[in-house]
Image (tube, rainbow, N blue to C red):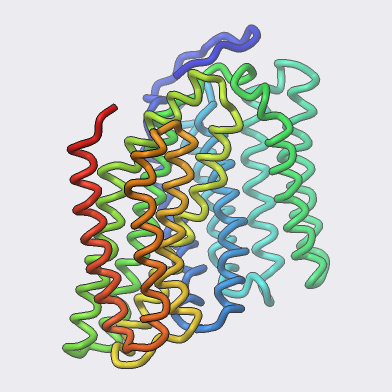
Length: 387
């Protein structure tokens, strides 16, 4: 998809700019490590505090990923070698964040901050390459968006907790505010907006999240290798497979066509909402779920701790709630969306009181049965849908 802007000539590139480049996929490997580091606490600590810390830290990580993905998406004429250089530099910055992640709210907060600052510097260089010569307004926007926020992240490395955490929040909120303020003119300022690339990148991120769930299942079964644990692990894989089925049979195609409609309509806020904000809850839900499944596999005969029971049920609800809101924002027929959304939200939620009162293995079995039913319903609706 293309939107014309004032006087910027399209440049030629030696790569397919409509799809994710191999070096972007190589960069994702360090993101796999980062998500794994962040989610360790969900598998080892069954407390609401650990869950809240994860959600907060993952929000900052998610926002960095969204920013870098969008920045790469709108780069005109960026050669494969130049992209490789930027991605490797960004990889080093994210690597620092990954190393710091387990102690990001402890002794390694300074490293977490420096990694985020370095990533902003990479994006600043990319935006300077892209729009620095366009106008004074463009220079002011990029200096405010990535330059000023990079300074905030650098400054936070020099101050103790909890002041450093406040600076992290301020930096992210500044970026969000600046993005929303510039949304009305976003498409007119960006000559090329590649929907296929965004869909590819988001699909890769979902694979990373689901891959972390599979890894958590395997690690938990390896640690508690019993017949009951194996059964619960198998049911857990059914749950992960059902989410993958929904996402890759329907979700990514809906994102592709939905973003195309939003671009054609010039709906910048819709694009931001359905790519930058709402998917956070989808991916966070998958990660919360993975922690609950790991605990259920290790202790299948025990009742899940309250936070794990909530993560089992709430993780699925977050996944489907995000998909529901995204589908409605894309303009899908409300009647069609609600036909699958209502059972997808109510049935997993109904597992919560069950998970709080019966052995974890039975709660996982109930959730697996529900998700299999939801996939069957989705297939039926897909075949009988009328546009």
